Image 1: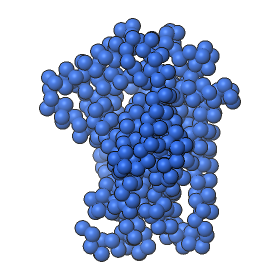
Image 2: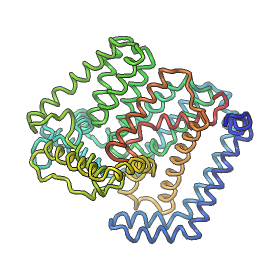
Image 3: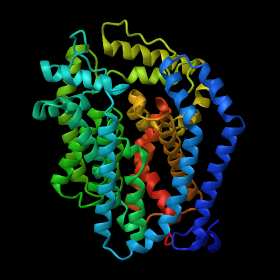
Image 4: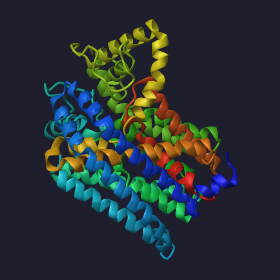
Length: 484
């Protein structure tokens, strides 16, 4: 599998690397042909059965513009293939730092343009984050629409939005600016993490892949936890790699992991996994213990508040039972669904969550074989699509864009996702994912294990594998890099 011919064929510095672009263009031409030969009719038939009227309108427009969207994607791919050859020669003439500044600046400008042009209202989960943030800013209490104290939606992101509102007066705009700053940090920290694992060309390629990834370009407008959460996790990974032995690094790592846990309760699992890394390697144990102390100190007041409110032990949020039932009830598909009864008639959120956990566990025990078969389906649903950020940005304001442009956004975004993930998996199969640093390897494996454990235990969804974006990007680049 690692023969020199294959290495040469897929090297960035060799002419046969164009084979990748040829295959990619052929695949797109094939998809265009399939769309014309019957794909459009199948799509229309499927859409007709969709019970959501908003979906029927939105995806109906996608279907109307798909032909032009496909052709435009083919044209853009061809242009990138041609331009990339010349860009490598141009990049060789300038300092790496200057090129990175140019790439990141272009990415930020594109994010700002899309944010200002689309400017969607809060949509999907972001509606709840914003509503809770406004009540928190107005009343100083984290409560639901009925005024009762709540912990169903994790408090971290609404608290961040409320803080931005109190300082700047506009939580929507400032929240989106935070998303853009987070995207820049994601790019730069990822580059720093893998700096010693890639050559100069590979590092620049990695920066470009992330800077122009659809999840990054369209990630500014949706007020979601994804970018900020990933910054916390990447920050911890960087601290572990760079001089974690200093006491203040242990404290900062604790604050980042506590912040990640408040943003998403699953962040606590990341905390356990990442704190375990230095202990397992017998390094920086004192700093690791300080990290644990900081995390516990940060979570304790909120845990006490929840215990007094719900008379149950609730470290962060009360929505665990809801997510567990969603992914494990007897009719669950493995992906996001709402075809189940959640006992929200209970006056106690924590008790409702406990009942949901019990109900889901009973369903698992009654049909263990079906539950086992759902595990690969959960993983499949997590990677099924890569257009969540595009949907959240475009769908609420789809009338602002022509049909063909919406289709182009969705098709090219998903194509980018499938190619980057597929090639990264192929890199592992070919054994091109090796790392010089065994410590970094353990960190990456810990993060991946935390992500997959969350998916297998709860439910499959694109948002849950977002923390793996930097790893997929690295493996994608590593597949092509000559020195790997």
